[in-house]
Figure 1: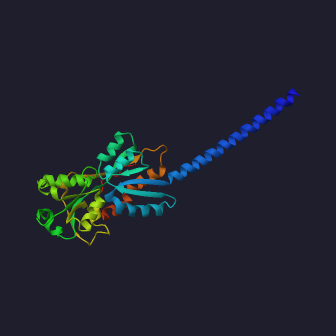
Figure 2 (figure 1 turned 30 degrees about the vertical axis):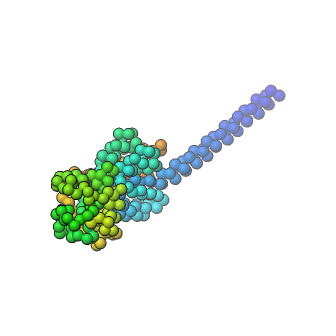
Figure 3 (figure 1 turned 90 degrees about the vertical axis):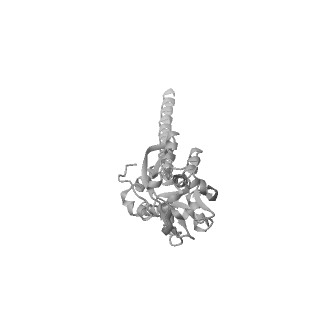
Length: 274
């Protein structure tokens, strides 16, 4: 009788272990499935000047990776940093300079290296003035009532615009005419719609399909302002998003050189591994 009880217990224990093992395997399979599904989705926080180039690159990427999902959110780099700091669920940050990614790195919110992906260019744009012929002298026209710039506190192109005006000793003279856009995209809209006679915007927006042919632009010499060294970095997440790693590598790929140059960007001589 005792022997049978021992045998029954041994058999039950064996069945329990077998069932437990299967349950563990099922749970692991479900977990891996969830993680793989998550890894297929990349949430990108990108500076507003990247709208057109990233939308074009996204099309190329999804053709090469049909199972992937890429969500693009555009805004001023400083505003995006605030959102990420406050817990916004982004996997990859593409800024308009190097300072904002460094701020996130200092807070321990990034993973991997910070890489330069392109160099931006500042232009003045107008739908009412021939700024392409007048150049920076157009700023001295007394008929100008409003000049649009991006918020210099949160947008790199706005910071460079103020820096330029101060270097030309025009800031004090023109500051009462400045209209501040939330980001460079909104600033471009102010100039495009005529709400400002002139706008300081990114070259990539001035030559984009929505604005090209509707106005004039003048490329400001990069010697007159600090370089717009646009960098990117992966955001630290509980589980490394392998699709985000893959997308970053794609962004840095020399194969996309023609797309970046199409929108007026200069590229770094060397591409670094993500």
